Length: 65
Image (cartoon, rainbow, N blue to C red; front, side, top):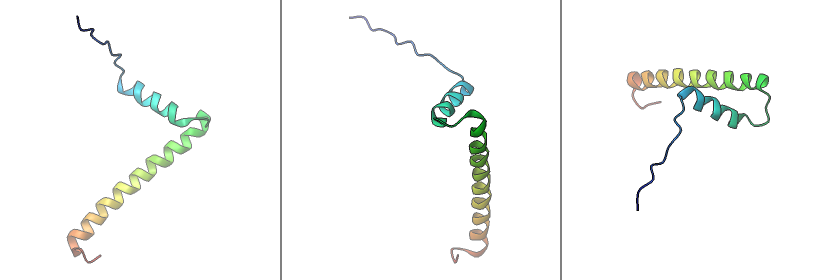
């Protein structure tokens, strides 16, 4: 039997990101979704800053925190 080669549609990163955002958005209107996305971006920024600060505190004071 001959093997069938499966043709897989390749999508760009932008398209896959947009599709996943549309799936996650659900019933939220697109003009309201921006507040959710901005909040998540801010949360990620704060989390990264806290992790860096925590790492510097542990380096400075050891694990006495």
